[in-house]
Length: 163
Length: 280
Image (cartoon, rainbow over all chains, first blue to last red; front, side, top):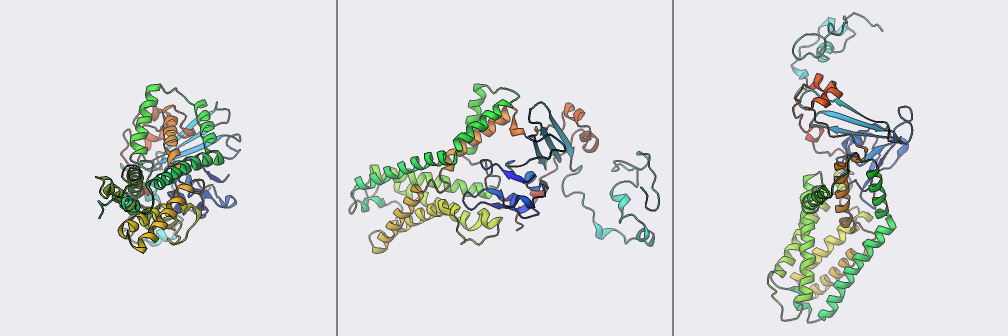
């Protein structure tokens, strides 16, 4: 369900206006606070919810993961590199947290330098894999940077498309 | 020039009792406008209902001493230094505007009630503070109007597009600008024109509280205090807790954290906040 703004929390900074991919978060002409001008066009992408420095934007969650009337709120913490969700049912009895990493290295320090990579060989071009895919998703080695390997997960890399 | 009391010369044409009556009228208009605004927007009702709801979902009770310390923190950070602004530019501009306004209004009242006879051309430090306050207001206000207003910075609108939300800032800017111009040209025909515009704009500023966002300055400390209370009592407006990633209990509850980030995750830096949002 679309986003809405708690007017008393919003200070009209414009972060949601900047980040909205549908360009539907605008500043009210009377109160200079943000609001969703076209809820029908909202994708519920949560970009504005996460970007708001005052947590002034909220979204009503769908009934397929919690009964209606619940609250689902999120804090994306850049400095900790985590995202935290809290889902609370309307009777207040079910109240649970989720916490997950969104980066494992400081922001901006692990950007692949594509210009330094050698051009793909014919084998790579003919392969179903994307450019450097095993390397970038760290499935090609057992090095210290590797989080999971095919072996550690009991997998083998096969040629061709398979399900 | 800035140490000359502008109200002393004005006293030759307008009796000081009229000036005092005008100040009292403006004061009453602000009080009345704020009360009407509170009733019309039902902001006080919403505020107390919200506070009650937060109290019901609290996980711990906040002691009286803690409440006093939170109130003091609200005064030192939100009220005195406007820490609620996430953008440093807006915060600096707001501080100039706020302290300029306080200096300007306080020194106006002191000059009118204490030094508004023709023989009070110099009135100690007050005329200097009156001019300084107006200059600070102009600096913070014009910076906001031409540079950092959200309509320009995020919406991409031109600076001269005026909407009703601008009534407060425009009447404030007009008041301080015409006050300075009147003070500089006093005694001439231009001086009387600027004086008329000064009175007109200040009447709009103080009389238009119901239609402008003037009243916001009286609600903000209460809202900031309530936000601190919800954090202290654990209700947090249903927001997730502020987890300490190095805490072993947190690591046990969320094993992804130590697995992917290690037992002592570093500070990952400002992330998307490395770049100021300006993408319209």
